[in-house]
Amino acid sequence: MTRMSVEERRSALVNAAYRVIADLGVEGATTRRICAQAGMPLASFHYAFESRTALLRAVIDTAVPYDLSRVLDAISPETNPEGIGVEHLRANMHENLETFYAMLRADPGRMQATISLGIYAHNHPELDDAGKIMYERLYKIAGDGLKVGAARAGMTFDVDVSDLAPLMIATTNAITLTYLSTADDKVVRQLITAVVNVMISHAQLL
Image: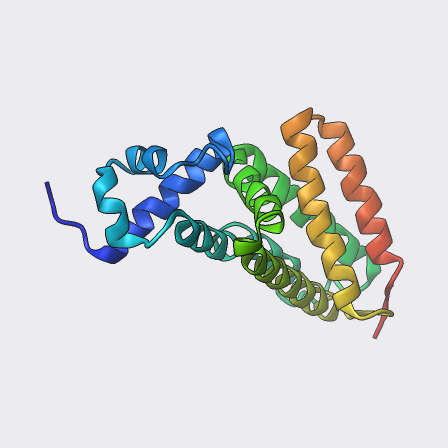
């Protein structure tokens, strides 16, 4: 068996934890199950992490860049001279929330695990700060995307994007929960339209 470096062990355990959490929830993600999923002996766990809590922190830290930043980046399209104005911004927001939905349907486990981790962290003091940092990062990504996307459409917002960013993240969470609960495409698309309309109500030409 090839010897794994500490970083390789950490990466394998983080990825395995995501898969176990997606299937069994955070409470069901024991170190034994995570190690089994990663294909490594339980005894090797502490070579990579000092505790299960430390592993969960690493999983939470990985959640943001892996799952959502690439989606929310798409809110910021390349400048298009033919695409200036509110309808261009509206279409872009629709398109990219639809892109998020397509990614969710292709791999629902990761987003389910991310939301589960946020709830778990909020309810466990030893992880509460990690959960808050995760959402602060998400809000910043969403806010930056909204600001740049609006500017490239020749638009701006009449409120600070820090007030709109949480709504965007709440929307991705709501889309995820709706899909996991009912897989109702009609409801998801009604949600997307409603949220985009709220966003657009705050948009104005530069």
